[in-house]
Image (cartoon, rainbow, N blue to C red):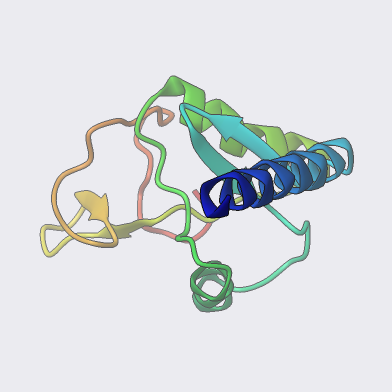
Length: 121
């Protein structure tokens, strides 16, 4: 009996999560790529504030690792007609960039001579 009750609870939670995700998609607040959820509240913030809000939400600032993830971020940029911060920083080597958590970038899709590290990229 306990197993059946747990199964029912899990199904109810899955249903509720699916409904909430549907509402958030309709309101253009989330999108998905490769099993990852990308979200935005559409509000303007500075980089540090954005990093902190992502942490508070249990996630991290987006660092695109493939064209699909890049498109998920671009979805919000186009919808909100604004820019997006990425989880990328300049490394100790000028002109070279890396993920905030360190390591090497596995994907880039930048315009020529970007990012330059000189303000808006």
